[in-house]
Amino acid sequence: MEAIILSTQQYTDLVNRLDELNKKLEEKQKNPKDTFLDNQEFLQLMNISKRTAQTWRDSGVISFSQIGSKIYYRMSDVQKLLDNNYRKAFTTKRNNY
Image (cartoon, rainbow, N blue to C red):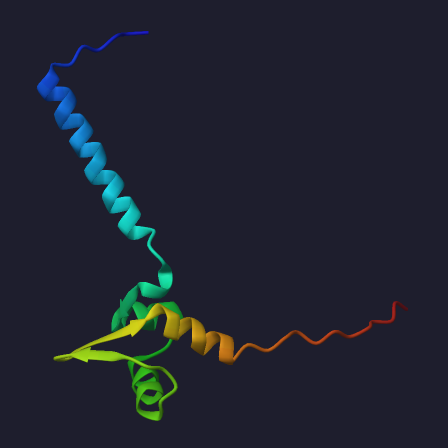
């Protein structure tokens, strides 16, 4: 095993970089309900067309924010949409012949 010797400055720089990476990771792992998706991410997530997304917005199926021409969806609203349209699987008994 090799030993690596760092100067105080190099060690401090390394620790600072690790702290920055840690902060970025924590930001990415924040509560998903606080996360916003732009329109393109929403289309990909739901596997729908732009027109379908427009129809859902117009009919009030999904809430959204608009800044200029950019559209954003709150992840909690997407989750709510999916939860409201959740259907339990039917249980059927099968006869084995």
